[in-house]
Image (cartoon, rainbow, N blue to C red):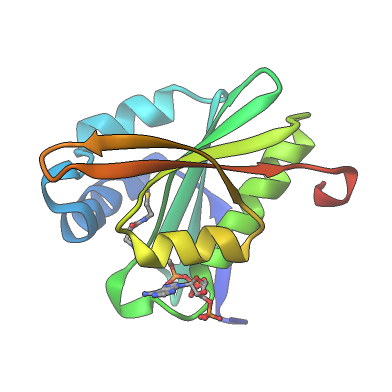
Length: 154
Ligand SMILES: CC(C)(COP(=O)(O)OP(=O)(O)OC[C@H]1O[C@@H](n2cnc3c(N)ncnc32)[C@H](O)[C@@H]1OP(=O)(O)O)[C@@H](O)C(=O)NCCC(=O)NCCS
């Protein structure tokens, strides 16, 4: 992982992120316009990108609201997955949320997203509630997961 570095999201990344979204999320992809709105939402919105060989290979972000931060997204480019980039990004979100004084990081994940569920469990998230048939069409449950933050996360 020595070839992968993290940095703040910049406006020049937005077209790349919109293209990656299309590949990763298909019909649910965020457009470039949505990314501009996310960037304009700083500092409440807080995004990080992973870079390898000068190219963006992953991204993640949080929405900070009072004592709690919500994970907005975590994604790794298909050809770069299973190399530890997702964990690196999530660890960075934990650090960001904790440094900003949050007591917990919350997220929502489709119950059928095995990769994301494993990643979140790996990083210490626990299921705190289930929203039955939340994702439509498909009747897929949403799992609400939480990671409590401690001094050591800063
Ligand atoms: C979920 C996602 C971000 C994981 O990114 P990644 O860079 O591949 O993750 P990592 O390499 O850091 O994997 C960390 C751990 O997560 C788990 N994991 C990741 N991908 C997995 C998969 N396909 N199947 C099972 N477990 C998986 C493993 O426990 C893994 O640890 P290991 O490799 O030591 O076994 C990536 O699959 C992705 O971008 N998916 C599409 C977008 C998405 O669904 N995002 C989450 C919802 S917003």
